[in-house]
Image (cartoon, rainbow, N blue to C red; front, side):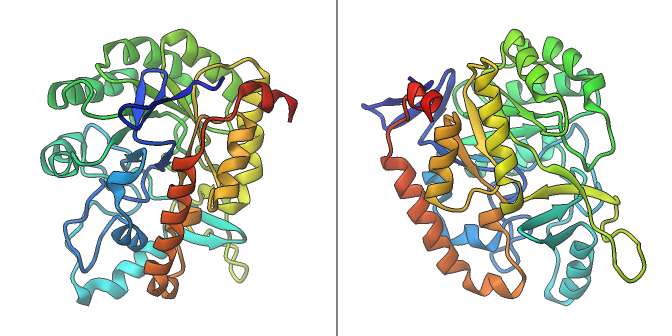
Length: 338
């Protein structure tokens, strides 16, 4: 059987040490810190999310948080006025671009920092199950992040912490620190730890390292390194030149990675993400070997005029959520025979 097991008495799903409300979670960044400060301009959160009960998801994953506040390639502000909206949209154009079948982004881990999140946002999202995404450039930074979460969040209050050691928007080679992060940070955590894998790194090797280090689960996959150029000038559209490709375009890549992880004998629970929009997309990932699935940009992002249809898009999200909640785990032997 898959590692996903349902607690019939409490309606919970267990992925090893991780307890979810069901097998559908949300991906990092698209919903900011899980709550918006302004109902009119929900900075950092997809407008679609305002019409969806986030507490009903298996878990909501936060924006990646660092030790100190980080502007990245965008901004940490969440107090923009209506008069500043045109300038804000221009700034978005330098860090987020649509492309055929997806989106390329280069926000660069812009976030308010772990202390501000734990003080100002986490207490307001306790009705949700939360996965706190953490990012750093050394094992020492990850240790600090883990320690601060341990100090502020009682064991069992969140689903897990997720170590983002595979982001393409911060211009860093995470392979140089991964083993140290696993050796030093993972054992310190009072919460289950998820490792987020990139299809652009040696994900099979990284998954084996994670299993040996006691990681509880894997997220597969992070965005795919990508580039868009202005055809008139040859200049990159994004401030960082390269960004991370997400959305429908990467679904076949995500399916391949999940399947290859299983074929390689990786038994850790897998939370799959990449191009998931419909219940059938979820079903494909389950057949490939995933234990849970995550909704990202394919659901939460739209063109600016498209957000006028946010309530209708939210109804679609609710239908996907209800479908996944009804399904039982797919037997692992069926995956092998597919």
